[in-house]
Length: 447
Image (cartoon, rainbow, N blue to C red; front, side):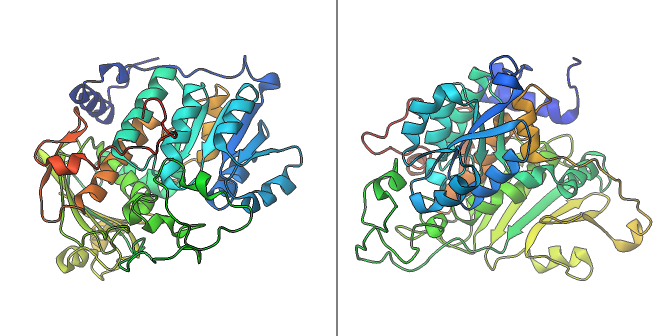
């Protein structure tokens, strides 16, 4: 195999040296399953059974070589559909019990739970040698992402983060345009989501009955005990708004929308991050974030650094930036890449658009071969090909996104990030948010 000497690959190696993790730079071969899995079948387990977990289950089992062996969900009611669809499926309410009893019967897992349990489950599975498809964000905290990246590399496991649009034609086309210089060197990027995963109201002061079938203690997992609040306050979906369980709009959508920016520019760890938006409350994320990142320059940027700005909720790029689209065709979610030779608008899950119109009116868009993100993972586990969003890539991506969340706690403060030490160099208080303490009895080795 020839060494990859592309600018993107060389830039990643520089990044790895900066982190002091030189072992990550060398190519490696993941441990295939053809010899250990009977009849070339990938024996799979899902952590989570409904919502995005159900989507992951359906997509993964769409591959005829994938057999779903077991599923775990803290809410028995949410596992009913999976049990009806897969009659031989083994169900566990406690994810730890599944790993204990089924470890010899599974080769891979998907972790599709609320954010706060991504890292504990993924780390435990990888320590047992299981390949992991992990939903975005890879983790709830920055330190967890770093540790998952290192464990995947140490164990030589197949990994993929659930940023399925990473494999979509539109995103891959945008990456291609930037790296081929269609709009020249990139001067700055503005990226946003109109979603509002936040809540400015106080946490209700009440305790509600836990619904039948839900194990609230298991749902809390590594987080501190607290009363159950019904009405959908936490479960099944509003946990994204809560500081201890979700990661706000940037954790949900940032990993998607930042992905083509990160990939196209071959970005590494940011130099600094600064929030100009509102501050989270005691228990909840804020909406309407405005976060400025400064990244080291790359072969695809104009200068020695490049600025990337994130907006969410009602925030949008300034009028002069939107004016570059000629008719302010700003979608609800997307990115604007400003280059030395033109501008590219990348709507979320839509074809990139090039400006000015007159300059690109005769531009011919290429046709790309389709890629199935879930199928790519399953095939790689079976020794066929590689994944494109493995933890070597998606771990640093998640770290960068989560830095924005930390920045919102310290508004109008320029936080200087030291990637090698996994800490901020200029604000001790911010470092307390890089790594959390797990609830007693829920500790996971390596985290």
